[in-house]
Length: 543
Image (cartoon, rainbow, N blue to C red; front, side):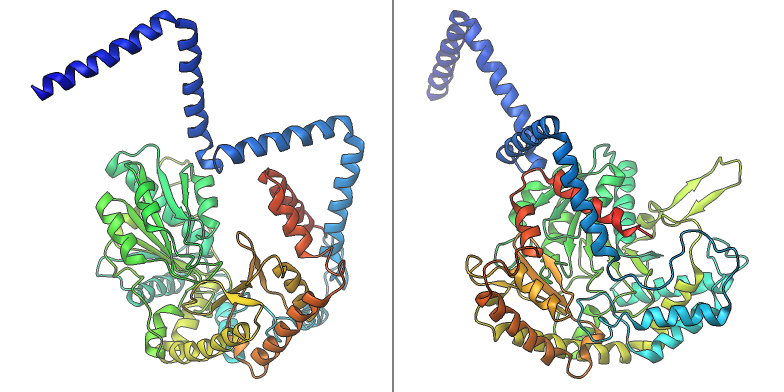
């Protein structure tokens, strides 16, 4: 009886709606179309920051477009001023002879070597440890070993394994050593790449192609935390994968697991977790992400490019680390930069997979090319065998004992940085650092502009990493920071920088990073900010 009454009540309500539509057809049509348009607009703007951000961006573009038409000469002149200022900044440190065409007569060997050595000696910032990350090497002896490896294999190219079998052997052994180090089982596999970005692009490609072939997914999506590296943005852009970004916790800066669960759907081919994140140096909850991936049958990539070969040796060095590698259920791939804490030469990384079947989808094969059967494991065709040899030499030279010893030294230096930050009342740590990336920001952003602190540190020779959303600074501690006196000097300069900013005259830092990032923060149209960044890239190619 209750069901009959409920059904009758629903029928009466439906009848009222039908009568209303029939009595006011024009109004109903307008309302229907308006709702449809709103829903369509809402769906369209979900990936652009929402409706409000879309409206703000559209209004901003309209205003700027108006000024470009009405005052195009003035706007063009101002844009040229900005571009010239960028070029002047890039060229300010350029010294020595310039070569914009191949010289008629070749330079003598001794003269050329002297020119290169003198130019290198002038780049002192990294030698003094006044950097964040950038240079990771483990001393001059290892540098000599790597140089010898490159000299011995400088003409090698793994695309010709029949001509360079040793180079092929070295690459296979680097991958095997890393699979063993990062918890890979008997079926684990991988390849070397040119760096973390290529490793990430290859992982996204492998999962996209696997999902297309095995699961029939034609509109692939990737779910990533806002803190995950921008290389995932690049991979999605290149590969036509829809990127779904989820926020991180405002205090821990770990990915919001509840939002990940809501974001994953039947088109999701890959979830991303970081160990550790580039901005704050924290680790996402990899086991929890693994369970989400298993539940939905999608992949989980762990970005360990920055954790590199430091994280796996922390337990042996006395620093516990939460599970993060291929041994974690649900993790299907992992990237690690051997050219960071593996101390290999720049241009070497590995991407590892739980299975050879998944790695197979990374490969590219052109079976019908008139030039013959063409097959490559990664983005590049020809690759420098010298870099592969250098990476192999670094792993074999360091050994587990060397990496453990290095981990202890780096973590001791990192603890010194943490102490230096805590000693300044105006600063606070951003998140809980798990390894060598220490991120700090202002306790009260209204009273301390952290970008001005960065400018003050730059005045004392430091080149640290400036971050946004929220504004903060990080220093990635590497082996160069373990030298005597580096961390005490950082502590002294950090305290001075904060004191100088808080007591400085009003306009002392008006043209520094604070002005740039402050302007970028209030521009709703990010394409304009991207344009400024593109101008900088253009300036880098000024000879």
